Length: 362
Ligand code: GLY
Image 1: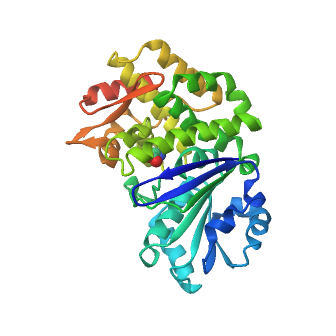
Image 2: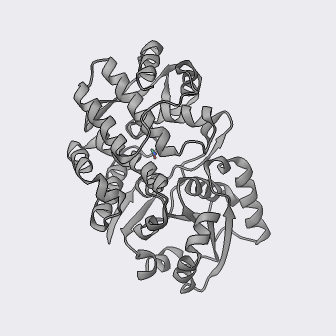
Image 3: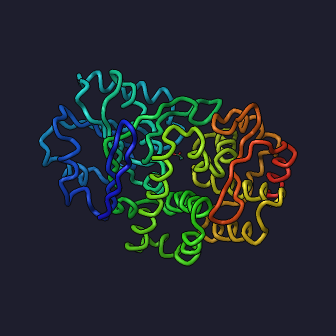
């Protein structure tokens, strides 16, 4: 098992990474100590597949245990679900000493964290991510929130968990589509931070998709380290953390325009990464070989690399402008790769370049 530590000014928490670690260890005991109740927040899919595993893991604690189950999908990441969850907690007479468990993918993590941040002015929660995407990215760093019909993640706060427990056992029941979607965030880390890691992904993507134990563990640990190092330096995304949004400004526009849930997050991000790479190519800040390598790896993994047919290039711009992270003095701010392993933040790109890049990714 690996253990990382995310140390912030006012808060610090462990990230445990391993196979079947939920039942093996004292981790849960240490995290849930002195809590009056545990409230598992999950979705129908995960609950059906893993209920017994989780009950077995928690029963040793002898603490009151509740389960709040929501339908599966990004389309339920909204304020209505938050209200339902809060009503559930109030009906169970939950006080401030409860601990919420976010048991699922990024959607469950965002919803649970948001509820934890506002319920009776804030309660504890832990993240037990079950998708690759949540294990390598969404569960770490305290971003919580929900979507608005006018924009993705428009409501939310930073509220860090007390711990993140990454048990790779959950990946065994993940659909191929979800696994592939999570790989988009993995490739993202290679492009942003580390050419050697990108080279390794080119060699190992097949083993990763087949969940070869030591490779998947190494991959998740590596991604968590990248993420932790950025969050430690810029918890609130004042500048540096923005680089983690490579491909996200385009990707969020796709998700918002096409409708939440139609594209998995990672699928939209994959297309967004291609658009960012194409933008960099038009501006001559990256060489074409690197762009080709990026697109080739995404394709090999099975990720989409072509813009949705029913979305015209100019339909991206209003969504990109609305994306809170993408605006700087009224201009669209984009994270662009200069080469594999290095990105930079650009705030002065003309819309016509962006439109050309979107067309080039069609
Ligand atoms: N998913 C990017 C971040 O947490 O900052």
